[in-house]
Image 1 (cartoon, rainbow, N blue to C red):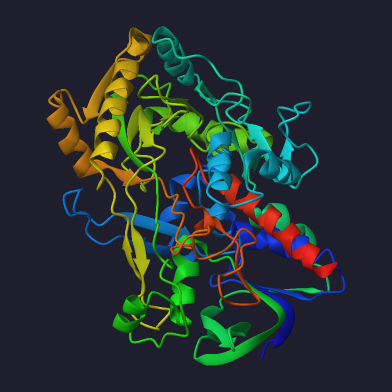
Image 2: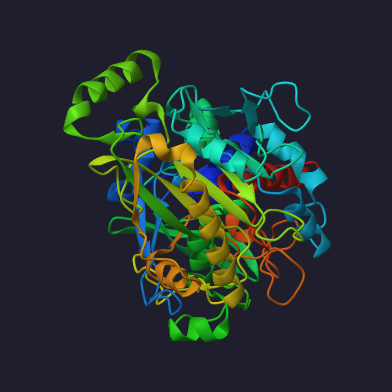
Length: 535
């Protein structure tokens, strides 16, 4: 039987959990336990940058969630894989390091979340960051644990995207996390010379030896134990063995925007109507649990080429693939050192907007629609992403059984404005790809193809093909209203010794990828907790 009492219990070994385990265990006087539902992340298959092409389908290290049928997307169930291993989704994601726009955080503060404005959160972004490209910038950190860098050897096809965007008056941007977000450029990623730098690699592995840090894997959390409105521990199981782990100080939920609200609901914390349907007694009514689900919706244009300059798989380039393999082993360069998502940009669909509402991810490789791998042949694709959707969804559990997947309703494209904005943006994407700058590659747009021309054609293509960008947030909303789940100190409202510290606390989704903001939330959360230890 594992040890049964600690000062802090961290539920979930993803990005936020790994950061908290590192920062809290710095204090040798407190005992910290990190509990992860999945296995360790030791597998070599998760390490190369190219792992993004297959890791999301690797069932051993993921929870293969699907949404409920989406009424605005032709009734399709959308695939929502989440990491189920140390490092969480940072062990399977695209590794892009994007913070969002400063105004995202200012809006959080303006809505009652004191201390979460841009100037207040910037130090926490910098604290975790070890930036290899911007070493003298006031906006970046150079001494953190998380390696952040641009790809050493990007594909030459990226230049066609840059040149075409320039012809359309889009500026080049050296740093999407700099003073301005708008423009096109190379992405920075969380990797080290072709090796994934997940939150587990960056934050957990350097401190696994600490005697006051215990890491438990393959542990399923059934719920939080509550007595007199206070969290006292968690109920867990490993195989057929059930037991309880006590928390002398606090329980910290870091299971993500699907896991954290599910654990709260299984503990009797949530909307009485939802709990009643799941046949769970209400311990603490909190109607906002599981609501406010937000995610970025995207749609992609795919192009085939007769040129073999883009990454791809074909018989004629077998010698080149072998060379890439050796190059990766010797110098960590080439195809296997790429996360494929090498460049892109941020744009406004209307000049009157204060900040970009569209993101591009240009992939110089021929691939099938996500989450599939590289396909046979050569080509490239341009993913068009709506950054600030108005549509919101929900997460609801079906029962108290942690093995039963919850009902995840992304409710994507429910708002008419979302579909209209995405149509306008993807038409611009086609303009970029249709430029003469790509002509030397002898391109052929095969999806959606030339038959899609009118706005109604595009709407139908989007409804039939749009996907999530795997950025679910918001289901344990931080705020002050009736729908808020946690306060600005990340404490679950109305309960003691229980906090949620992960992407689920975001009141509004940020304008960019969500892993860097999740790490920031954990850095700030750790400091909030440390201040309680000094009083």
